[in-house]
Image 1: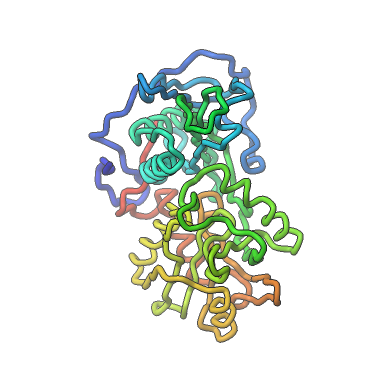
Image 2 (image 1 turned 120 degrees about the horizontal axis):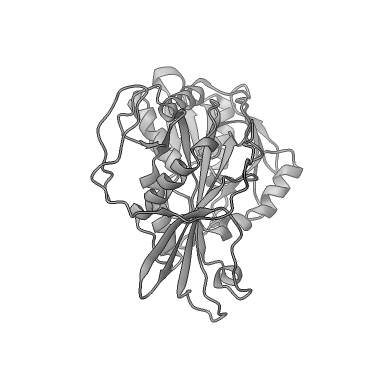
Length: 382
């Protein structure tokens, strides 16, 4: 489905959706604690949630229906719920950025809606209509506008999830589903200071295999990564580097983020990122940075990168920077790589100019201090 919005390239503005039909979401009365204090600074990632959430339901007879904005609270599910046993669930993550006391901008909600629909199809689930996805996001941000932080490295993180709800243990897809959208204030995942992280190449486990669910944002992909991430942490790394399942030599992802390798410097710098072969999550931030880099005249290639190439090109100076990207961490420079047969440093081990430039450009679009020629920001007014 195409985006529908006005074309506005003026700094300080956000595009408004028009022409799209949004379902009406009504506020269901409920107990929201009176006088609940808002956090002065964002708490740890994903620990304190806003006052409300959006729910919707699916059945074969009615499709997606019953969408409602309601107070945030516990869900009641059966112990035999399909999602608990067989993992039939998908989710997304995107952000709203403060513009002024009564406005916030959702960043690329339609792209996240489409990716969630793709994930649902892969997991044999009914895809949520993008119109409902965006309507839910707008309704929740409008209702909980006071929760949107205004710091440069802060935002309101929106977490939609859909899962099978029927109670049976037969090995078949669910027959009923629920969608829930919640939100929480957050700072940058790795902290406000831009530092280069240390990463560890995983040689014992794989994240995804050809024909598997690597391109879907489903819960099992993340639970299956915990053990490798814990091992990376014990080795002194911030994140784990995933390799391909067949040869165990081609770089795929960094934790839950996409990777970019910078060859050269200045205007002649070239960015290389692993291609989307079905085992890598198609990151919305990845796509955004590719466009921002090309807008600035940089060459961007999608090509395989092996661990050995990474090591050798860092030693020769051909690779000058490496950075990861994702919704939670935005642009994260990589300064040090740990591998079983020894580690190496990327550049001088500190954030490089290309990563810094792209991080600044991305932030400026988020905040409305730069033009938005690709019409990524969608304004929500209280």
